Image (spheres, rainbow, N blue to C red):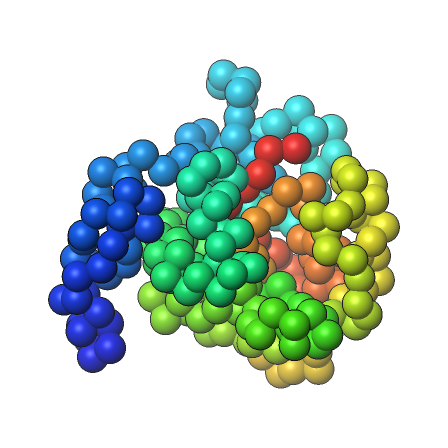
Length: 237
């Protein structure tokens, strides 16, 4: 057992949602964790929550499936998860990030026990200029937890952001988001990627899928056969 985690598990802390004192591996009480916006049945391709009874895929994916092969998230991007992610990403609230990352790690590890395990975890990269401003890449930190919990190899700098671009949150709709990041990613010359056949992209939130699809495009051009996406939360289009 990791000594740091063992100490952390014994220390009292405050629940990130209700602020009551809790003890445990991460800062959420059982009541609040149960009330988080867990996703129900989702599309087997894009991971968006399904409203159609009996369907395995959403109408969008039946007509025009994305380039990646599957997308998995434990949560919908709704309160309070949306605020926890924003606090993590923009206010360096690492307690929120760690708690949600541990939940994602458990969620994905259970899935991988029942199916295909990826050869490699690849965090969505930030451009160097944004990384300097923010101080950390939230996707990489999420991927570190996922790698530690699942035992899946992590390639921290396997993907590169080739040019700066405005934040995707400033774009309006899928078309603008797609144009904003087109031809902005590259694959590093790394033996781990060269030898990988199935990889998992790791990010905080998936909304229009533009980033995931562009990264999938360059990965498959590099010889990767299958790409799945893992994220903390899936936002509805």
